[in-house]
Length: 383
Figure 1 (cartoon, rainbow, N blue to C red):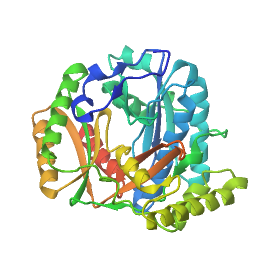
Figure 2 (spheres, helix red, strand yellow):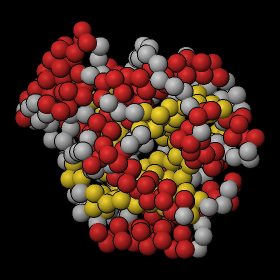
Figure 3 (cartoon, rainbow, N blue to C red):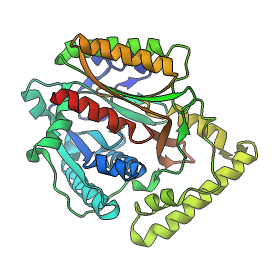
Figure 4 (cartoon, rainbow, N blue to C red):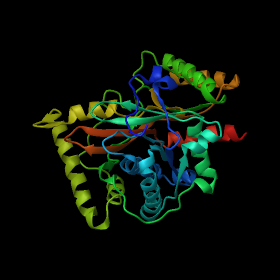
């Protein structure tokens, strides 16, 4: 796996927990991990958008750092953190970028970002496994998908053991140019935004087989529903002007001398999108209606990071059925899980090139739904 051409997954419900559709990482690779410290206090202070933005920044920066030539990269947003598969040739540069990312997050936002690198060989030495694939949406728009107990372990090792951590240090960062958080939260269309995190109890292939069964049951609970939290894109309504908070977040992602220009471009872009929307969604080469549809398709509401990580817009009845499925599997000793409910979905955008149709979008339940679900899961594992 010297190149970064990774397997592509099209049907997450059928293939998302099946290692046959993934590649096992070679032992000279590493996993890059970023995790926000103190999410509890930040959430209590109403800084959930800040948390999502810094986590999105981790994806943007890691994606730029791990890219080896023209190959695609496997990187994933986790609500209050990120994970990336790092090829051998990019490990040294990624270490430096992680250090600079942690320094930047604290200096600009007052957010402590714990970052680290875990060699895949160290995971394999403990009998753990790590698989990676891409959820592909065409035109090189993709999200990284990660399977295996080694993925969960890498995250835990960076959180708990300084030997895997990278200390903050100032340095250059690239990839932040296209990061934004201008869209308002999208209210639940079906009644509930349900954030789900589940990990298998059994190690190895036995645990992955359980996850396949659990995903199939969850999918059955949503039959007949459009569970994608952004729907077909129509719930996304352009605003004439981004909020001050959104502009402030974006401005701080640029060097001091470029911040006023970035704010101006953000305001101009939002105004143009609003006008085109009022004019029917398309004006000349600008097609906002298509962009909204693509946003909905390219949102990471179904993914895997060791086990499934889902943000689903469902009815209260479907949410109850999903929770019952998870509870039954947990009672049988097959999984541990965390769920959190929200009334809306938040969106963080990474636009590489609008004109070239290069953009992906990260979703979370309002009020840091992923983080709340993960806290429940963490407490269960600790108990």
